Length: 354
Image (cartoon, rainbow, N blue to C red; front, side, top):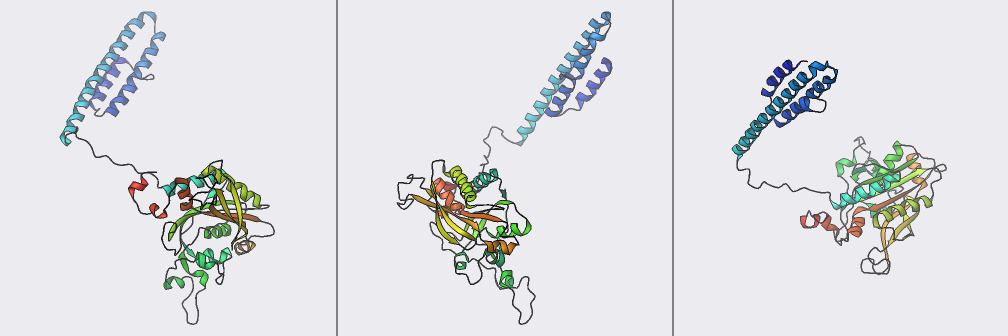
């Protein structure tokens, strides 16, 4: 491409430029390090000695013309933008500031806990909040007549839901496992995952759960849990203790101590309640820990063989552990909050602290 052709091209293109972005593209194409002017300058050493000076002068004249055109076009575009903004009103007036939101403290704690277990090889799975009675109770070794069902009993979804999955015929009643309810813990996802996958498994399940509890400073009819479980050959109680120790020290600090107390859960055997040394008094005893020096944080144990039976796993071949913890409980300890209701009242004075 010769210089005269480039001049014609420049005059044509500059007329169609009407924005700062297009003008910058024009500048880069002609004056950039790999632009047309740079290409013309690079041709000078290959020319005969007697032509170099004249060609170089023509290139320099072309460059100055492009610079002049860009400067004029820049003034024109700037003037047009100012006129456009002025027609919209007084641009010196303060604007309306949009307040940026941030994560709710419960969401922050869920994300933190899931990240900790994800680094240990656990995957995150979520499940439905409306569950079958089978997944919520029977599959977890909590049959209809079991006394522990009173603790976990929850909100059923009405008489119409009781017949879901069963044909309406005389003298025929639907099975209780088909009744729908709001799940009372996140453990039903354990049944769903184990029915659809084969070991090895390492899963954590965050989500909302529901129980007919009277609302007070430490109870709510709706709260959040994280269920975790691992299934494989030769999984032992020591594996559970190791995973929970990593979790507790990551959340509450490396100086805390842990203890396991024997307990009963129908879906684990053996079962334990897990405590940590009080993060306020360092185990010496204070009002937060009831002068005991320990704070309960979760329940755990080895998965009961009956649970494996319900999902079709060979209890002679596989073992596993499971644990469950309340997110609000962890958040209250972590942030020093003394009333669970604060999480759900949408009081910005409270939420802005996080």
